[in-house]
Image 1 (spheres, rainbow, N blue to C red):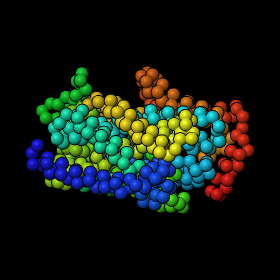
Image 2: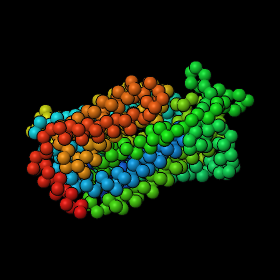
Image 3: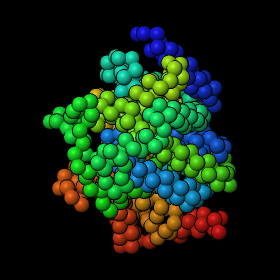
Image 4: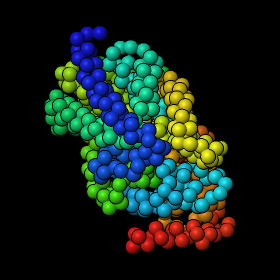
Amino acid sequence: MDNNTIQILIAMVIYMAAVIAIGVLYAKRANKNSEEYYLGGRSLGPWITAMSAEASDMSGWLLMGLPGVAYWCGLADAFWTAFGLAIGTYFNWLIVSKRLRRYSVRANNAITLPEFFSNRFREKKKVIMMIAAAFILIFFTVYASSCFVTCGKLFSTLFGTSYTSMLIVGAIFVLLYTLLGGFLAESASDFMQSIVMIVALTVIVVISTVKAGGIGAVIGNAKDIPGFLEFFGLASPVVDGNGQQLVEGGKPLFGAAADYGFLSVCSMLAWGLGYFGMPQVLLRFMAIRKEEELDRSRRIAMVWVVISLAVAVFIGIVGRQLFPDTHLTKSAAENIFITLATTSLTPILAGFVMAGILAATISSSDSYLLIAASAFAKNIFQGIYKKNATDKQVMLVSRITLLVLALIGVVIALDENSVIFQIVSFAWAGFGATFGPLMLFSLFWKRTNRAGAIAGMLGGAGMVFLWKLVISKIGGVFAIYELLPAFIFSAICIVVVSLLTKAPSKEILDDFEAVRAKNS
């Protein structure tokens, strides 16, 4: 390990020490009871609510996945994805946040998403709770694996070590941190990490643009690649049988620009629909101390999201000029942020910027693991299996669940050629289609009933798997991102089944009207 690498490591260790300190600070309070551990006692302020929601949402995907897409095939895919996410973020904060905060209290003070849905429909047999918890376990395990892939790629690239060993080290750190501090520690550290993320992105894009000769030079280079800088076209890297881009005379080869039509745009914009079903974001709405503070949180969140997404996309574009033939596979392209940081900054500064990637990864993976563990311990173990379980027993089961989920996530992430963007896109679609339509109908359509809720979750989740694994293989119009058809199908299931079955009880309708009345 050379001197530069040691300096990078020192900077990252300093950052990790700060993260651990936050966990220790909140550990005592977090372990008071399950509500403190899982929802922080509904005590988050507007800044932490906004910044932790976005940091836990974006993850290492923002610093590696999105720049990687822009680096590999140009502007279109990355831009329309980012645009859809920005729109989804805004409307989620605008129309969902306040009513969910209010309704979660009305629904017997629900502190998890499965518990909210179950209490919302006043079910005695906890079928909704069980189904919701099961899908959270499935999709968050996949999500956590994407974070472990980020850790493996980051450390193996920086230190020239084994991907697998670095993957395991990263997973152990995330697991220990999540066990220690719970939701409050996670949210407080996410606030710090959101700042690190946006500073890291901004610093790298400014320095790299100057190094490349300015914005004009970057744009000029991008225009020379067919389809690379088009909103309705896509660059087509020429690859061999192993998916590695061919290089001739020091320049990577590209074919003719591919068409990027209306369906492709809709497919990427559909990412925005996912927000309505994202547990890690929705829980922040439930956890804020005052409903009135959500307006300020929305403004803070939007500024952060727009800046971060725009800068992440541009990093991929400027990276293609500075390092045109360095990353020659779709998976390797996701390392462009690391390459720019380590070649543009002094080792110490590069270490802190690398901490930005680690920050994003930790902020997401601890959220995913904590929510998934709560789904099993709070909603399945206590909610269904052992209703008289004590808080101490729930916390123990939660920690055991965390360990098991982390192990499964590591197994999924063992493939070194995993593409972070693809892993995240599947889990995102799963949550968006399973919970997104149900969340909207639960909050805004009083005729929604228990049968419709169950049909919507099963239909949405089932369609994600069916479309991804079977229908999309047909190609053409069927190659659209699975979230869009699955979201629509879930909504149809909710409406049709609700109308064909018994109307909600008077108690359920009274709850709905009481929540709506406060909003008028």
